[in-house]
Length: 133
Image 1 (cartoon, helix red, strand yellow):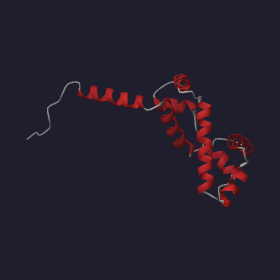
Image 2 (cartoon, one colour):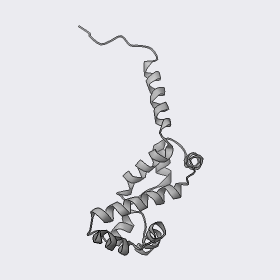
Image 3 (cartoon, one colour):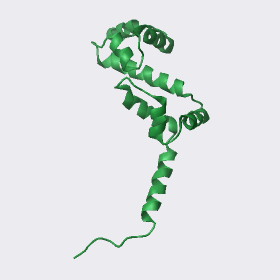
Image 4 (cartoon, helix red, strand yellow):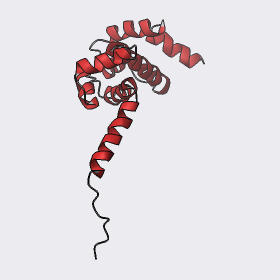
């Protein structure tokens, strides 16, 4: 005895279009941010890979981000800053070199300069300020 409902022509296509519309309703910056955080744990965030995962070219992603008033680099820097701040608050033993590698920097000095640009203080000073609070 077959209890499956009868097939409805076009139902799958309708569902696919609805899903695509819902996906487009979420700003590309939010979707890209989630993917950047997911890849950041490996220390290997790649703009082309993020765009591909979003189903667009790198150029289209940059154009859509620009329409939101963002650049890919600004979005990446914001994610890096937030990730670093979170890691410093939750992982006391994490070295600057390890943090730099996680964030995709080959040198901890480059990370230190970027962190100071983002927060106005060196990572070591930020860490000390956290411990004092």
